[in-house]
Length: 115
Image (cartoon, rainbow, N blue to C red):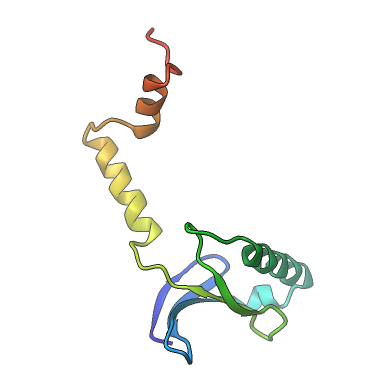
């Protein structure tokens, strides 16, 4: 493990390096959730679904152990700002009076009324 990237309601996410040298993000489930079979079932479904999704806009699942005492999943690491920073910047932009991209898109597509 190289660093902690963040924490949320489900657990913590760490920056790590694989044995092969790849930078990865590792999500580790909180202990209190790991004790609940229903949570483990849903987590296993989430990991299975993530394994099936691929493409340019997703981080690949590289490994996981949903049956471990502390369940975890490792994905490819995609560097970028954290969600909190992006949302805060977006909110600040809207407060400064810049156009809302959704409203602008609707207006340009004829979806907003002129009244």
